Image (cartoon, rainbow, N blue to C red; front, side, top):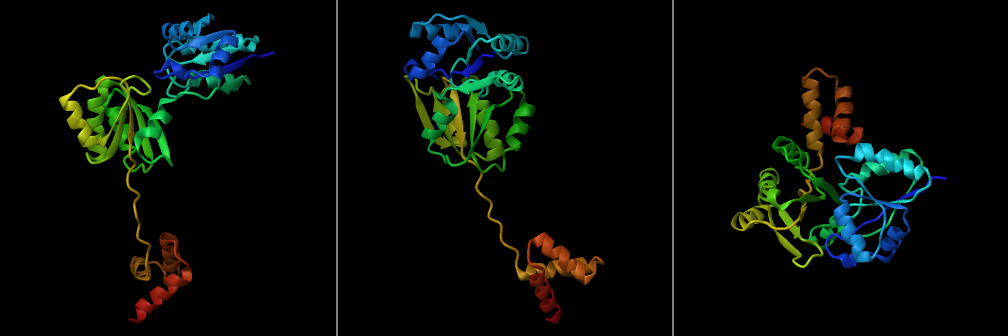
Length: 279
C-alpha cells in the first residue's frame, strides 16, 4: 500500500511558529525530504527529533524526485520541508507534488507559515484580490518582460526579493509601473528586526540608495488603477454606422456590425442612425 506525502511548513524566522501538528507529522514520518538538510537539522535539533533526511532541492529534483516517489509507493510516509515557509510555493516541492499526484499518491498540506500571506496581511494594501509573482529573473530582459506583462494588472502584486538585487528591481519596477506606485516592503518577517516600510517605488529607491538593504524582502505592490470606460452613446452608434456605410457596407449590415462592436441593442443603433439621417 502506498504511503503519503505531507507538506510541512516551517518557520520563516521565528522557531516558535512551528505548530503542534507540524511537529507531530515530522516525528511520525518515515523520512524527511529537505531543501537544505543543514537548515532542517537545526530545526530538528530544536524540536528534539531525529529522522532520516533526504536532500531534495532545485538542482537535484530531477533525479531525487523519482527516488522519493518510489519510497512512498513502497509504503513509506514522507514529510517535505523547505528552508522556510510552505513547501511547493515558489519552491521545487511543486515538482514532487506533481509526481505524486500523477502516481495517485495522497498529498496532505499542513497549514502554517507562509511569507506571501504574512506580508500581504500587514502591508496595508488591498487584500481582496492579489497575485503572487515569486522571484523575478536575474536576466534583465526576462525581468523587464515579466514586469511589462503586469503593467495593467489591477490586483495587488507580491514579489520575493533578495537584498543584493532589491535596488535594481525597484528601479525596473518604477520604470514600468511609475515611481508613484505604492509599495510595502516587508523585511525580516517574524524575526527580531521585522520591519514594514509603506512608501512609493520612488520613495523606496531614494531610501535604499542612501542605505544598503538588509534581510530578505517581500514586496507588496498596489495594482494599477481600474480603467473607467465611458459607455457608448447613441451619437457614437450613429457615427459608426455612417463610417461603415461610407466604407461600402449596406445600412442593414452596418447597424448589425455597430450593435455588435458597441454592445448595444440593434433597435437603439437603428433609431440613432435614422435620427442622424433626418437631421
